[in-house]
Length: 188
Image (cartoon, rainbow, N blue to C red; front, side, top):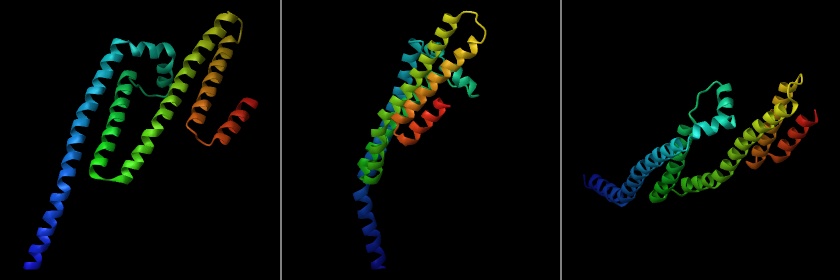
């Protein structure tokens, strides 16, 4: 009976040593979740005021999304992206409070990759916008000549493909393979 009481006592002491870090991590997660929700709602409201959906439609991005068979609200997508970015930082802080260094290192690596990912997304979006501009330019310059709409779509597609290859290279995905594939596609 005495041995059982010692084990229970030891377990209680260990629990009391760990409890403050668990409570701190829980407080960080709750506060972070509330902050992430505020950031999401604030971004949604700001983007609605800026008519972000109309800017996306003018850039041709919503047309590309519709062709993929999904209906995605750009404002909601950006809001959710910001929500999860804030939550990623919050989880990193909570894991630090718990003393989980492996999770901390993993999230640190993920957070350091986010700027590269954002720049790759911006490259693709700008490629779509420039591709639409090139398509409109080809259509406007050639007038009613036969075959111009097809040529305009080919020009837009070429610009978008170039931007996708630039984005993949920006992400650091096997640069030699990306360059070789790009050369083969445009060489053909």
